[in-house]
Each structure stands twice: as C-alpha cells, then as structure tokens.
Length: 153
Image 1: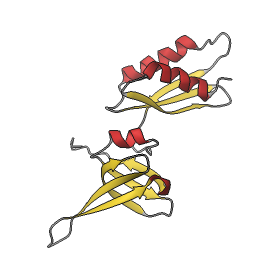
Image 2: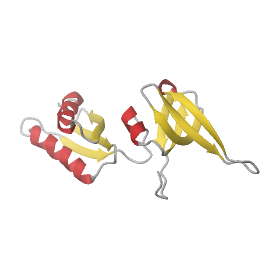
Image 3: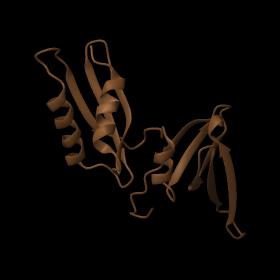
Image 4: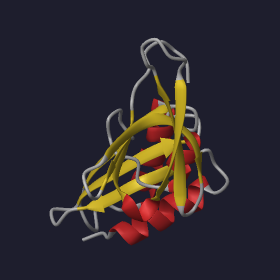
C-alpha cells in the first residue's frame, strides 16, 4: 500500500515555488489515493490534471494497483492551513471556536498564531460599527469562507 507521505513528497517536489499546493493527501487501506489541491489564486482543472498525470507517471499500477482522485478544495470546506487564510484575506468568513462561539466577518489578517476578523455591524439608526476580533488558531474549531456571488472579494 502506498502511504500519504510519499505522495506528499512527490507533489511537493513538483509544486516547489508554485501557487498551487496540497491541502490534504489521504490513502485508505484499499489504496484509494485522494489528493485535495488549493491555490493562492484558485485551482484550475489543468492543475488537477497535471498532478494526476505526475502521480500516474510515477506510481506503477503493475507493481501495486491504486485508485486516484485529484480534486480542488471546495466551497464550504473548512480551511486547514495558514496559506489558505492568506489566500482568502478580504473575504467573508465564519469562524467557530472550540467553545462553540461563532464569529463572522472579513478576514483582515493572519499569521502563524492568530487571525483578525473585521465585522461590520449594521445597526438601525446608528452608523455602521466595525468590531475587530483577534482569534488564536489554537481556539479555532473551523473556519469556512462564505461565498460572495456578487463578485467582490
């Protein structure tokens, strides 16, 4: 059976200094390989094809058979790594903390230890008030980007 470490190393070697990166690589006991890609500017189908061909050109099905699925990180999936937070700066996000508290706002910044959300509260008869929340990564259960189908970031 192949292991996720060797698949990750193979992908990393090919995507060095690329805008595309793997978010998750999983190999189940039946040798079904699932690779989830994301990108600083999104992922195109050609990016998935490139990684699929790389893996298929390196692993030998004659020696060990496998199934392969290469996909892009989807809408509504929780962010998993700092690079994804940085790629989504300015976008609206929903953050759920480990204690169940929920915050929604624009992702203003992110670093190795925390994120900052800017939440514009629209109140009747008052000016809009901005609330800034600084949230430590260790306190975050999930962060999901809220799609904006109006086209703005």
